[in-house]
Image (cartoon, rainbow, N blue to C red; front, side):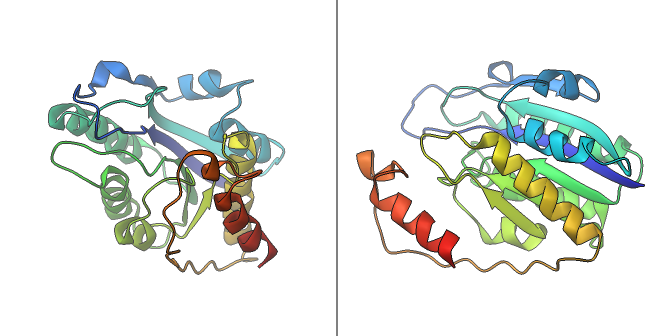
Length: 220
């Protein structure tokens, strides 16, 4: 039986927004309430649950979820501290797991932490240890940091903008995590910066320049 821990922390910050975000701007859920929250919706966790739920040898351990639906200003330091504490406390309180799936975003920012997702991953790794595989999902517009890569065994990102593949992204992450647990994959991640400044219509993956990059990556 594979015991898979899942947790979520998602915010897309607009650093130009002068109004800071706070804890009350997030939808927060704990434990089994996370499963009900994602049942029947188009989300990464729903996609992952579909993959895990199709297996008789997988037990899902939901711990914590915090997400801000709309783009907001930089998260106030005390509010990020509370979210981080609840996120990490959920991991500490969970029974032993064999693998971990984190639904993240890659575009959070807090007053005293420019890389909240990297912080959460590094602190989670301290709790979980180095041997438990962690797979995380991110927005394709997220900022991928060295700290994120160091503490994830693998990542899955959205392939579409406008985002219509939340479920598919979560499913890809879940399938990859199971392949790692079964010894079928040993992921190695390399980050290759592309010298492009892409905005507006060029971000649309079906027609824009950014979509061309995605298609080249898929072909490789």
